[in-house]
Each structure stands twice: as C-alpha cells, then as structure tokens.
Image (tube, rainbow, N blue to C red):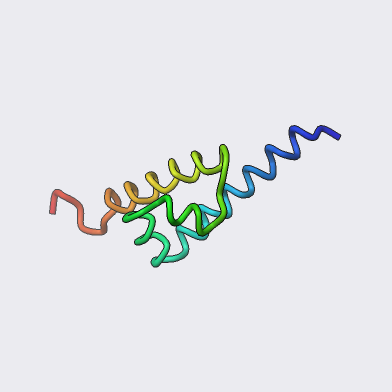
Length: 74
C-alpha cells in the first residue's frame, strides 16, 4: 500500500469537504468573504489543504460576483 497516495487522497477529501461546506452555507460564505482565516480555523483545515481551500474560497467568491443573474450588459 502506498502511504503517500493515501495521504494525498485524504488531503483532497479534506479540501473538497471544506469547499462543499462553504458553498452550501450562506453563513460560511459571508464569513469567508470577511475573514477566510476564521472559516478555515472553524473547519479545522491545515497544511497544504489550507492553501487549497483559501484558493477555493477566492474562486467561490469571485464566481458568485461574476455569475450574477443580471449581467453588466443589461
């Protein structure tokens, strides 16, 4: 059994789960917009996963802003 592969899989699962929780919770999204460090602490994200979740939070916040129902052309 390859321990490195298992560890990488666990980190990937941690990242995905944290991003799902943020995406699915309006409260967490609002808090992440104000203070992403607090959200990551609250979710217990650390190490490499913390960097990936911070990047994901940025993506979630930016995509939400860009994908507004009424576009800039209206």
